[in-house]
Image: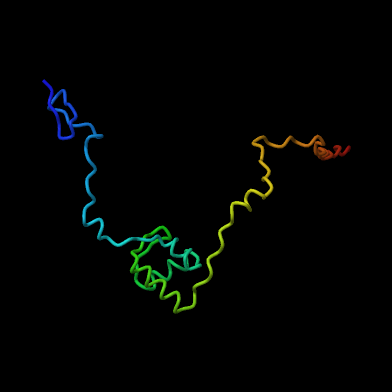
Length: 138
């Protein structure tokens, strides 16, 4: 005797669950949609044309607890950092990213061989053995 689930899938054994393909996706929770978006410190640094260190220092001056350039800050904190950088005149033009055409035209780099260089054929000269003194005759 087979039973049918909500999706119409026939279940041979009622004690088993539906295959994952039959389970509809769960709706995202309202809490997830209300969370503020976050931005990484290094992305903010790139946007402002600052170094990662300068941006981390700005965050720490404002009391935003970041440990490294990989830390995330919420958008409101990022706005505070942007305003402070603008007030202090730190904002620079972001460095232009190299285009792919430049990479294609660049000459290929030399590939270093994993083999060691052969020793030179000219062997270093051997040092002369120290001269021994002849015993004094009496």
